[in-house]
Length: 194
Image 1 (cartoon, rainbow, N blue to C red):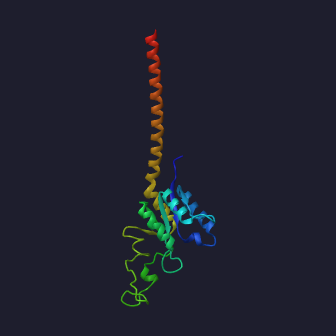
Image 2 (image 1 turned 90 degrees about the vertical axis):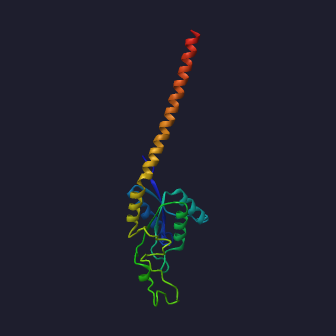
Image 3 (image 1 turned 90 degrees about the horizontal axis):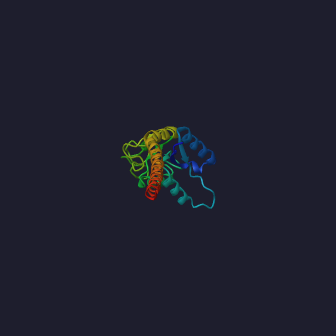
C-alpha cells in the first residue's frame, strides 16, 4: 500500500468544546480523500508549540481553517502555523466558513479606515494578503481544501511509492550481484583447484 499524503490540519477547532470530535471529523475527511490528517490536539504537559512544529515538519502540506475566530480575523496560532509552513516550503491550502472580503466583515467608516482610524485592507480577500496572497484560493469547506491538496500533491504519494520501489529494486540488484560474484568466485576457485 502506498504511503499516504500527510496533511497538517491547522485551525481554531482545537479550542472548541468538542475539539477531539472536530479533529476526528477533519481526519475522517482526509482519510476519505486518501490522506492522513494530522490534528494538533495534545495532552496536558506537552510542549504544544514544539509538538505542533514537529507535526508541521512531518506533514507534506498544511490545510488551514482561516474562518474568523474571536473577532474579525483568523486564529493567530493558525496564522503562525501558516507562516511556519510557508517558511518550510510546505504547500498551503486554505478554507473558511466566511469568505467575505475583509471590507464586508469590517466595513470602513471613512476614507477606507475603521472607527479607530486604521486602514482596512481592501484587496477583496477574506484575510490579510500575507495569509491569502494572489493566486491562493480560499475554499468554502475542509472537504474542498483537502480535495485540492490531493489533486495538487497526488504526485508526492506516487513519488514516495516510486522511491520505495526503487530502493527495493536496488537492494535486490545488489543482493543478486553479490550472490553472482560469490558464485563466480567459488566457480573460479573450483576450476583452478581441479
